[in-house]
Structures are given as C-alpha cells and as structure tokens.
Length: 391
Image 1 (cartoon, rainbow, N blue to C red):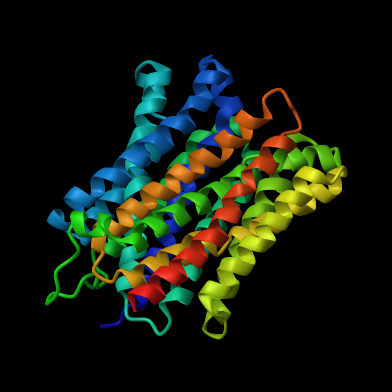
Image 2: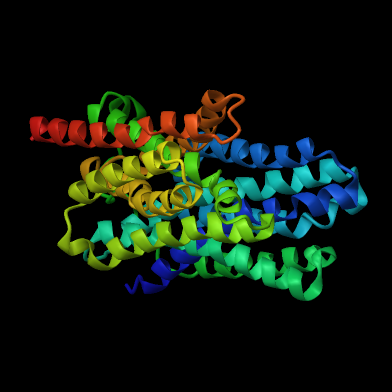
C-alpha cells in the first residue's frame, strides 16, 4: 500500500489542531465587544478548550480501539469542523456565552482526539526513519499556528474584524476536507495483528513509561512557560503595538520551533535523538537564563526565540522514544502521553504566574520554570540508564 496520502493527511491533521487552538484567541476583544461578555469569561474559553482536550486524552484509551482509528480520526475532524461552523451561529440563536462555550467544547473534542490519534497513525506508517517522520509531523502544528495568525491578520486587515464569522466558516473547510481524506487513506494497525497490546497494568508497572510521562510533562511546560509570554517580551523589547507584538513574539517562537522540528525531520538520520534532545534541553536552559537574568529587553526577546528553537524536538522526540521502547504500548500509551503533555502545558504557565506573584516582568517565574528543561536532561539520562539496565 502507498501510505504517502496517509502521511499528508496526518500533516493536515496537526494544522487542524492549530486552527482550533489558535483561532479564537485572536477574537477575544471582538467577541467581548459584540456580545458584551466580560473579558474574564472570554479568556475562560481557552481553559475550557484545554480542559475538554485533557478529558478526551484521558478517556480515548478506553474507546478508540473499540471503534477503530479510521472512525475516531474522521469523527475528530467533523467535531473540529462543527465547532468552527457553530462558533458564529450559536451566539446568535441562544445565550451568546453559552453558544460560544458549546462551539468551543465541540471543536475541543476534535482537537483532543487529533492529538491522541495523529501520532500513532503516523507511527504505524512504514517509513525509513520514524523519528524523522515524527519530528516533521509535529512541525506542521507550528506551521499551522503561523498560518492561522498570518492569514487571519491579513483577512481582518482586508475585510474587517466584523467579518470574523466568514473566516470561521473558511477555516472549517480544512477539517471537512481532511475528514474525507481519512475515509479513504490506508491506516495500518499500531500493534501488529499477531501481537497483543500492553494492558494498562503492565504499562503502569514500566519504569520507562513513568520516565517518558515526566519527559512529556517537562516538554509541554518548557514550551508553554515561555510562549505564553513571548508577546509581552516583544512589546516591551521593541516598544511596538499588541498586534505587532503577537507577530514578533508568538509567531517567531512558532517559526523557530517548527524549524527545529523540520530540521530533525530532514537530517535526523545523521543525529542521534538522545543527543539532540539533551543538547536542546541545555540550550533551553540557556534561553531561560537569557530571559530571566539579563537586564536587557532585546536579549530577553532573543531568548524567547532561542527557546522556541530549543523546545522543538522535545514533544515529538519523547513520542518517538516511547514508540521505540514500548512497542506494544498502543493507544493507551499515546493517550496517556498526550495527557501528560497537556498537563505540562498547563503547569508551565501556572508556575510562572504563581512564582512571579506581583513581579510584573515575570522574570522570577521564568527563572523558576527553568526546572522543566533541567528535568528533560535528568529524564533523558534516566531513560538511557533504565533502557540499558533492561537490555
């Protein structure tokens, strides 16, 4: 079978996840103005989105194998499309905030399923170097994030913010088209038919599994602890507007993160994954120190960019390690890793905010969050030691 179309559909799947995670934050002020909803409630939509995705991550291990990967990934795309289509419709026919929440919950179900399913579907495809393929796959989330911000900014510039409803419909076309593709492409089983997947009990007894879970938590936290504040440092360092800060901060972070993943996707066969991840974690620590200890806003901004470059391999690299070392992990393994990654995505910014307290420049919190990339280095050493001991 030719799995090239499957691989391309997986790439687009991560673009869909980037759409559902990054589109509505661009509309916060517009939604607040149009529907007279307090900003605190508007920003709660992000919390609901990731909360639903966390729940889906946790539950998917119990139903995906029963209904099958094709049905699950197709449903994920239709949930994503339904949320984007109903986002501009429901607030007009019911309580506006309840309508927004309903639409967000729908596409969050899709986003959560995509996060759990795309990596194992990609892993099951017969490719020459799975670590390279996984890294390249995850780069498409970054390119999707950049595309959402750029295309939306251009659309609003050309047609005005009041036409955001049309843009929401346009974004929905991508998950619908990809759902149709997933109905047709070949999908190989993650665990060969002649083998049995690891039961939960066996998975939870594995030391490698728990090390990988910690690595996923540290990976998500290392990424989000800085990316959440990239716009702030851009505005402060360059003395530019909020809109320009979003482009210079989060977009630069996403481009460099995607570049790191694409680099390993191109040249990964020449570089040992363990070494690349350890070196990336060390570079990440340096970037955190540049942000938190150097009293120069421009250097802080450069540190944000370097951080994006350094965290690129962490998430896909951990997935690749897990797939290679726990070959019978199956859906349960990938769903729990996705859950751990999302926990890290929440823990990173939370730690920064908690430690910073009244320190408005966030540097104290960023310094504390350097513990996460240090954790990656420690876990990498522990992973290698445990694997050699088992061998």
